[in-house]
Length: 180
Image 1: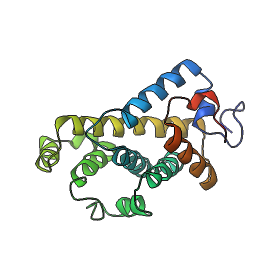
Image 2: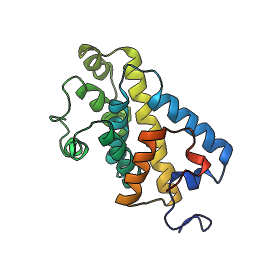
Image 3: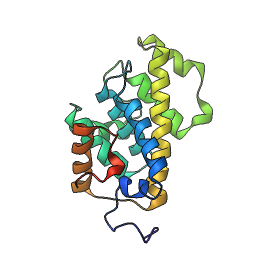
């Protein structure tokens, strides 16, 4: 255990409780980013979060956000298929350039180009949609490292429970010890 004060079955909220003020601010940011106004649907935003987390091999974030995305209507197994296929064949055609942008930003950030953005614009996405995609990818690159740095692992049951919680309640009260 990296943090002896955290329980063996620690989740993100436990790590956030180490500094409740920053934890609450992170939750407010997540609420606005993933549930606030955006040209991207909540479903699309949760899918991007799960996808980026899968690219980073962060089982906790991928599992939790995939469970949330499933409750919002993402087809079972889609995240895994997208992770196995860089062409993103199973993704909605319009969403592919945003997922490709998130992938490149996660795995090869120094190679992002205007052509990557142009593909998103050609698919009908606005600058705001691309901006929100970048924010989601950057946030989950951060959160994946937050989770790994604290030694948080979880398991299918915890991921499903956290996914249900986020689906039903959003992000604002995560630090306040929601029932698990």
